[in-house]
Length: 250
Image 1 (cartoon, one colour):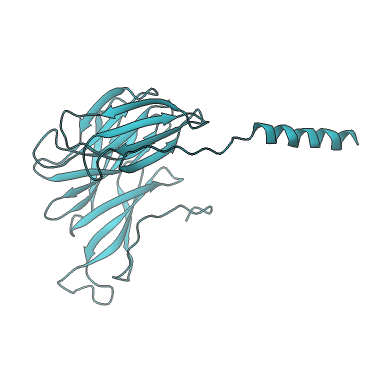
Image 2 (image 1 turned 60 degrees about the vertical axis):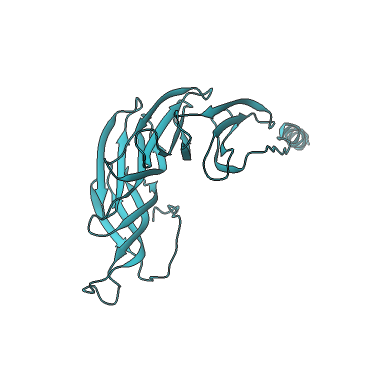
């Protein structure tokens, strides 16, 4: 009987501690990304204009109240942040495209502290070629891994490793033989990664065909960015946009 009473009291306590639902709204035109922070808060990345324009980063507490808000600015009117992650120290890493360094888009990554204050902003691009950072990941040492889309004549999957201070450690490029657009990547249990996106390749029924079809492609790399294998899905009409690691590691 005493055990049952304790169990009931624990249930009532857990209900009393449950977070109340809340709704937050603003007049910004487009939300870009959202993540839950180390302290249970929520950080939202948004733009005031529908496509480009002033970008905002703001944080809500666990009750949905605004804690702080910052305007993301690189000195131009064309900063386009697309994706963000949080490192193990609670810093926020954001990637996307900017025209700060040239008249064309180039890939950037910025790092902000837990209060949303800018620590650094760097360009990571191939000279004279368009570039965007599409996906990010941080490891236990707060190194940053970035998947980028470089719009050259050949196209390629570009993958970079950057330290916590923004210094480029290495860059690897894959699928150099075909035009390719990187969409993103996932981390694997062995410390490597699987990159995925779109690439032009011969049809599955005729590998010697001179023309390529736009197909969904995957590339497995190790922790140093070296390629282990690549694969193309056989159906030319497939239009996938993400992949996940299964519980069994597949």
